[in-house]
Length: 180
Image (cartoon, rainbow, N blue to C red):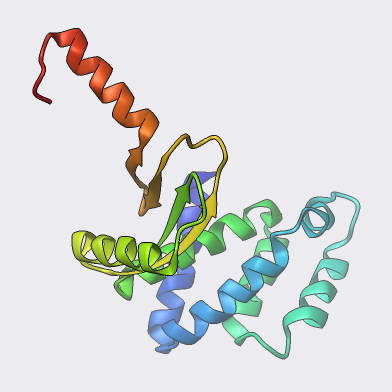
């Protein structure tokens, strides 16, 4: 399934590049992904007894005025090939690859308490410098984080939580080292 998802994302990316519509397509794909990333919509799309024509009608009624022809064609192709369950993941992969190609990534900051704008901007600046890309950050609060924060960016985790610091300290003490 991962190979198929990647294949569809690559094909869509190539179409966008050939058409010279990478930025515009990215905006449209985000719109489609967010609209289809709903449990009820997914249940409708993957239901084996709902005819393809009804699924095409959903796409037509929802997106025909907003999407480029090749993006509508992509959605129709996914239905025709019985790949409805892969639409959202293929679009998400397309978004990630397109953002990387444009020198951008998305990062998620998870902290113990709400961060100020200055703190969030400071983290974004450090990430941008370290990853040499534009970084768009979203911040969330997780009560399970004891203190500090961690960042998920481009498949990597930057962990600055109190739990990880305590774990590192324990490992140093186990090794008998006091300088870690």
